[in-house]
Amino acid sequence: MAEKQTILTEEGLRKIELKLEQLKSVRRREVAERIKQAIEFGDISENSEYEDAKNEQAFIEGEIITLEKMIRNAKLIDENQISTDVVTIGARVQVKDLEIGDTLEYTIVGSAETDPSELRISNESPVGAAILGRAVGEIVEVNVPMGTLKYEIRNIK
Image 1 (cartoon, rainbow, N blue to C red):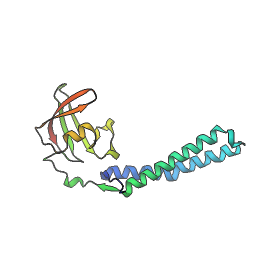
Image 2: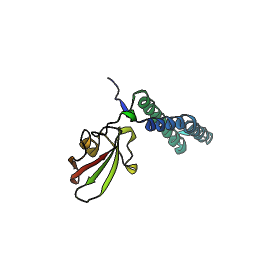
Image 3: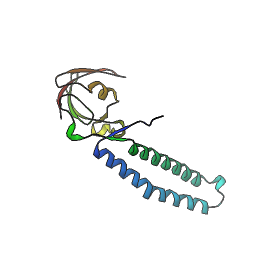
Image 4: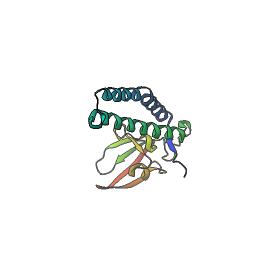
């Protein structure tokens, strides 16, 4: 089975590489030290510190494998080739909420770079999927659990 491509910007790839380096060089060592200390406490069969450290070690190793796979399957977005005619991955899109009147500016990214606090939304999210391929001036309806949102696409950068 082919692995899923990870769509990333240059910045997103750098962040993943930094996180991977942090896990490999710092976190692995910290957890190994915790395991060593827990073993020194004696009987590990009833040692919750040892169990906790081993669980954390498994989590970190899983994260490392996931990040390595994302990097291996990365498809970089060339920011110089992002269209401003229609919404594409990598574009910054200004939309107006037609019910509330608020104007928001989303950056459309692959799912690996999603960060709602920075208004970086996935191309697979309801809003991201609804506005992909749309042009300035178009009205889009987005079905979300709370109902239907209506956005007008105001600008594409």
